Amino acid sequence: MSRRFEADFGRGERRRLIWNAAMTGVFSVAGWVAILFIFLIFVFTFKETLPIFTDPEVREEANLYKFFFERQDGPTLAEQFIWQPTSEQPKMSLIPIILGTLKATFVGLLFACPIGVAAALFSSEFAPARLREVIKPVIELLAGIPSVVMGFFALIVLATWLQSAFGFTYRLNAWNAGLALGIALVPIIYTISEDGLTAVPRAFREASYALGASRFQTAWSVVMPAAAPAIFASFVLAFGRAIGETMILLMAGGNAAITSFNLNDPLRTLSATIAAELGEVVNGSAHYSALFFMGTLLFVITFVSNTAGLWVIRRMQIRMQGEKA
Amino acid sequence: MRATSTFTRVLFAGTLTLALACGQRTEQSAGGESRRTKPLTIKGSDTMVILGQRLSEEYMKKNPGEVVQVTGGGSGTGIAALINGTVDLAQSSRAMTDEEKSKAQQNRGAAIVETPVALDALSVFVNEANPVKEMTIPQVADIYMGKVRNWRQVGGPNAPIVLYGRENSSGTYDYFREHVLKKADFSPSVQTLQGTAAVINAVAKDRNGIGYGGIAYAKDVRAVGIKKDAASKAIYPAEATVADGSYPLSRKLFFYYPANAPERVTTFVQWSLAPEAQAFVSEVGYFPLR
Image (cartoon, rainbow over all chains, first blue to last red; front, side):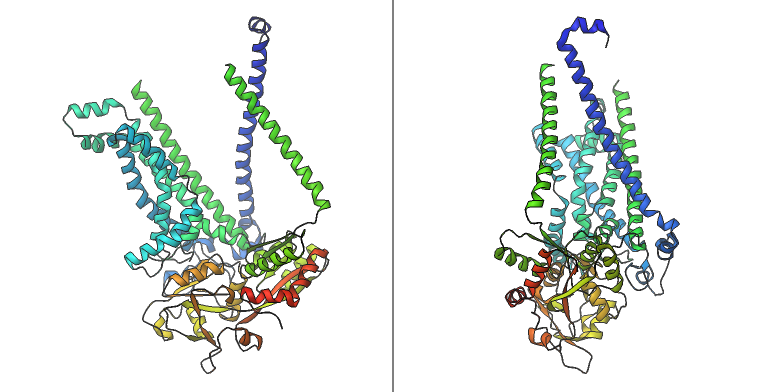
């Protein structure tokens, strides 16, 4: 700052400016360190995946063809696509594991989307202000439950309930895992949808009431469509979370890599496979690279879905603010 | 404005203090380590965690000042840690392969010493409500390879068989695959669980379940009698049948450490083999060496 400025504002102000500069520096460094970490993790994961493309020894056991297309002999899909990386003849099909991931995610979203949106609609449109003050923090608190706790609950309690209610052959199956996952997804969908619904301008509701619409009609046919981008974004972000969730699915999914579309069968997800197998794997082996390939796959999927979700939210915010002005 | 600047000042001072404190703490512990005894770290087999923990507790009671840390993770995990030099002693429910031994020898600069510490009967468990009392090894193998899918086929009720097993870092998984499946692949329907305790828990809750693991974990489940083949007699896992070698799936539980290991390792291993410590082996549920 200029000398005249200092003279005008005295010593105190000068100290204030130094503090300001110092703190700006501290926070910028902290911010850049965080970004650097993420970048380095990115680089590390890709580097460990690379042997699949470059190392001839690794390529013999693990390559893109084996991951996605290789079939064993057998009459059923479950016998054709097999994940047995430590067997005498390693079989490295990712198909059963990708299918398991999608099954768990599907059930989780099937359960969490309607509940999350309905809860958001209720608290933004129907609940009295005082009740809303309670609902919002309570649902958001749900996001703070550690996933180990959720997984343990699903493993011990939920699985037994579901089995006695529906007579499943397997205690741990896609329904059990998906339901537990769904509970973890509800807060994400709720929070973002609720923000979107509350951001719908008052004028929309007033216009609807003026035309004689009931409260429910207004909420359902006017407010919800207006907030559709936010609701969609909440689904996309929940999808990203579901794909990457590890502990719940490791504990509640049964961890059997079966190529099956049946939701009553146990399942095994990408993240759970990494968690269960990375501990013992020999560094640099084909199995090791295959696990890192799964990590890269997860990274790319979550990165794309999160970016898409955030992009939609941003666009919606711009649109809403534009309309207000 | 005044409030903000006080706040930032406190924040800044706090960060500095924290940084200094951290620095000091590492210095202290680095200095302290040279004076006090280093902890003995043990890692590996989940089957042996309860054994290792019991032995280390008693050992620490007897030798105040000594610290022994025991963790599980699977035999493969323990052996990998031994090779990488991050652990003093590996527990394993399977023998180390020659390849693993030579790798460890390269990294640790000394041959690896193999010491059996207890005997185990690898048992096949079913739910207590299951009427099946005995099975042949080929039957168990067919069940785990997915060829036999209904309890009716092995003399049980008409119900599907639900398979529980261990993840592939487990020594029990390797042992079972080698000695029961004769190196064939497990069926993809096997639900892999973390640790024998989890397998036992699942079988205890599942009428149609079957699981395998070390005998010491048997609780609220029934271990079936094992026949070598259809013609032989069923043998139940017990101290006598393991001791005389008649139980077909008896195995040794091992300690592995490099020959140049510090004294705290060898003292512990020697103590573990003494009759006094072997009594704890039976208390935990495994069988002492003769």
